[in-house]
Image (tube, rainbow, N blue to C red):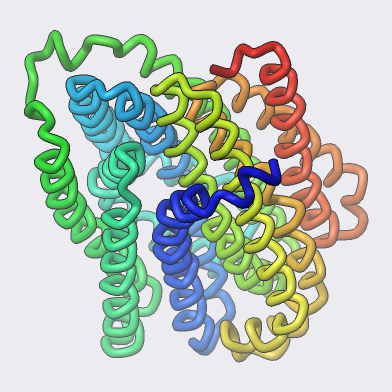
Length: 442
């Protein structure tokens, strides 16, 4: 381990993949913070609550299909490590095909889907009204948003983190500028925030396809448009992997959705304060995801090349830098939490409520870093069933903890979330070490 930590080329490799993704990922919660800040300075808390609930529902809907990115990353990284150019092209084409199929289904059934989702919400009528308004507009970005997941995954799998970085940064800058224009300039309120995101998603699609074209030329890949027989070849493995990651994502989003809706039932100030704190949690998640993405790409490449030494070095180097980043995040929330909350909302009751629950956020980075890293390992190894089983155990832990502590109100929700993150890491770590000892990981 010490020898690997002294290897400067390993650190350069990890940081070359991780830093661009960390920088680009930080713009994603930054966009959420801008949304919250712009909406949070309007005259009523229910605007912020509506965007929080509606935005969460869109995230749930799209990120339930997050297997499109994860499966594409793992499969393309393994194809890249094995130097299989045909499989690289096939992986991208299959991913885009699936993304468009799922988009068509979402658009066809978005109205009954919206009714089903919001019928379970106990939020105040004003919050629910603006949440439904936000959802009904944002859903039309589905073809672009889902295709962008495939594009991101494929570029990462080919060990290119610079293109995804610029893709995310440029897109979110567009979104932020349009947010300010539509909400502040045109006074479109919640509708403005939703339209800004739709336009940004389609801008990302155009930019992403350009980057894919450039990367395919660099790697001298065969054409992406292929006969149906070639497109469907190997679909069974892809379907099984996507099924397992989908079930994993379903468990994940069940916990986040429950937290949003249960928080909404505790009052307008609680749902608004949780919206602020969840923006911070998303910042933690996206920051740590940068290193998880690096882990996915490096592990997938090592497995494709059948190199145990590459795999071992990837684990050591990425874990080291993840710990450094998580420590910095915990210190930032611990020392500057009040200032960060004040930047998001100027409503006094929301600020005071958010401060009560801030300590849960201080502990979150160091507890959650392990689940992000281990997710990266299993995505790169395309071991979907292990990820599915681990997430199911973590979900049971979440609801058990909430049920045991429900008399403590919002504290129960945050205690459940911290336990959820911890159990994800613990269960995956046990699985990993068992498989590593039995030499079945490669």
